[in-house]
Image (cartoon, rainbow, N blue to C red; front, side, top):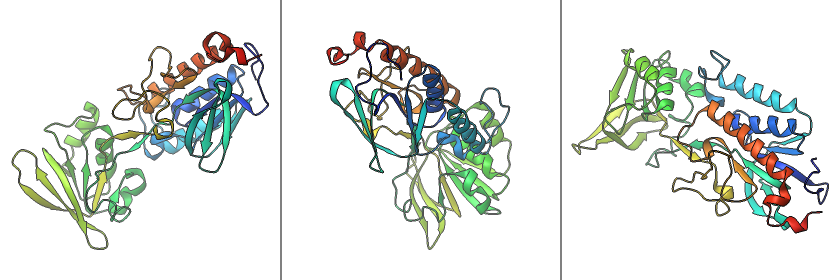
Length: 328
């Protein structure tokens, strides 16, 4: 535990608690431990959202790597550090503690205190919120093509969404599905050009534009969906055996709502130069922030920056903290 700027008030106090085990959280942990900060990393799992990807082709240094491989490498890199503890739990709440400390609570009854926090909790999949989505979840409604694509061998499926995750899902389904309908609300696909080319080159794919999915239908399993043309107002039904939902992300920030500034989407507002939030001693990195670019490499860089800023804060806590008089 670092001592400059004041000794710790008790042995249970961490210098840094990092929330999240994706590229941002893992990078932050490597940096804080190398700076000899007493660090606790709390995460439900390592790897973040990419754990479900069959092939990641833009992780620098690896021409291609699966999400599960990346997850395991992040875990091993963090575990190789000294001066770190790891708790695989879900964070449920962050509250202010005495003397400008923070208390992190988990779903397993854990309670941990630290001088500073790095929030790298990422985001999760957005749902359509339409009839049939919950009813047929796991019975034709899917959110992970890596996990579920083989179940649709020789069948017709739909992918809802126009971004990179949606296009990657279409590509994942091509070796299995008989037909893939790409259903988008706009007139144009929004993913990277390289993914758009892969989709356009396949005769299996039909893009349905200007369409809003209104209902997923079926008996015991999905048999189709109903959608409406946003311009013409015409309703249509499409016969498919599976519906893959890829319409964006919701930041995992609920546990810290009210403590730091967020935008309307629930993303934590960050000072991009330092990783600092609106609350002194709380730093943020990765997809949970209001950075418009949600990429693994950017998240890792965010984690490193937040760690270095947090190190400076802990090292000079008397200069930054309004509770400086409470520290010896």
